[in-house]
Each structure stands twice: as C-alpha cells, then as structure tokens.
Length: 79
Image 1 (cartoon, rainbow, N blue to C red):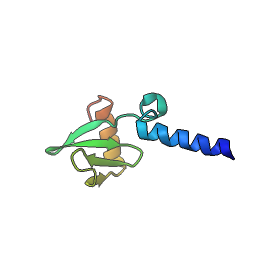
Image 2: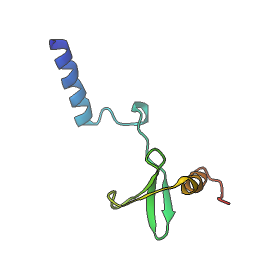
Image 3: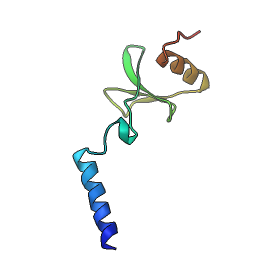
Image 4: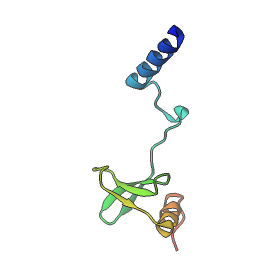
C-alpha cells in the first residue's frame, strides 16, 4: 500500500509543478480562428468555438460549421 500512496503523491507533485505539461504528455494548443470580430479556440473534440478572452462563452457547432472550421484550420479555403 505504501508504494501506491507514494506514486499518487509523485503524480500530484508532477501536476502541481507542471512537469506533466507539454506535447510529449498529450496536450496541445487548440487552433485559433477569427469569427466575427473575435478570436476563438476551435475545439474539435467538444465541437465548439471558445472565446479566447472568456472561455465561458462558447458556440456549439453543427456538422456544417465543423467542416467549415476544420478546413480553415487545415489551411484550405472553405467553399
């Protein structure tokens, strides 16, 4: 049991110190798109645009909007 407790404490220390951050640990910066007069994070997993300045403001995207922003992020001009 002591080994498991130490592993948990080690994990908590990693998270607190930021040692777990970085692309090698699985996270990445979300792409940024301009929509209207604002800039938004494009979150494909949640199917949302999230306001960069206020993450509590978001827009749920339908499948057509998802395709539109996916093409914009990949550098293809939307039709």
